[in-house]
Image (cartoon, rainbow, N blue to C red):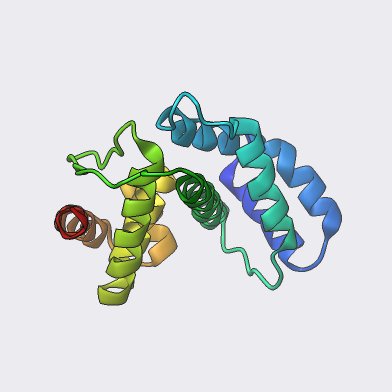
Length: 192
């Protein structure tokens, strides 16, 4: 397992235009990216045609195309990776829902672990809509959810990326879960 410092140094070199740093970086982070993608895909429906490796590859392709990213450290890299995977899955879920007839919404619960139910397509879109609404109210809380839930970052890693205390992350995490539950439940009632 590579050290966080080794990953950070390669990220910084990549940010400065060193393409060989990217070639060295990918084998070092691939397993973690694959684990992150696998966590997402476990929640996906069995009939989902998007595979874990395809999700990692798509995130990688989008990342390579990103310009002017000033990588801070390993945690920042995985936070951005999580955000990209979220966007890919939401886009995929939206396209699948648009292709289906009668794919109406259903009630979604948000438990303490903020786990998405097995009906991932509709639920992921609903969660994405709620996160976008949360961003308008308090973008830091949206980032906390994104980093912890989608990125799998610890409280400490999230605090480091956001440059706040661990206590602040925990408060934001708790408030965001309640806010998202209310938002998602409200949208479900409005559409019924």
